[in-house]
Image 1 (spheres, rainbow, N blue to C red):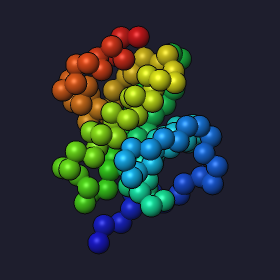
Image 2: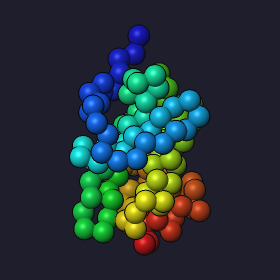
Image 3: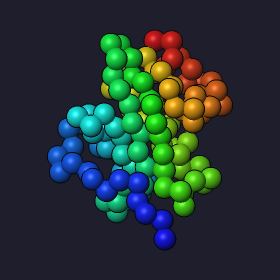
Length: 114
């Protein structure tokens, strides 16, 4: 049995909630993180920090049992799509997984040069 990453989800989400298939993604601005939820259980976390005109994505993780399924990449894509749609921040991929994902998806490279 795999333990959840982090079940402590604030009772009030301070920013956008959007859906990706049957999963829900919340941007918890006060906690500086996006969470990926399935049936209200946290199955993924993307921690970030805002520094001036940048959003530094510092850590992305999905439950170990879900790794290798493409879920992490889909989560990163949804996070970057939200950043694109709702901010003018330049993305700094401080997380190696995000940096690798961006190299594999050059159509998102513009986000690192805003």
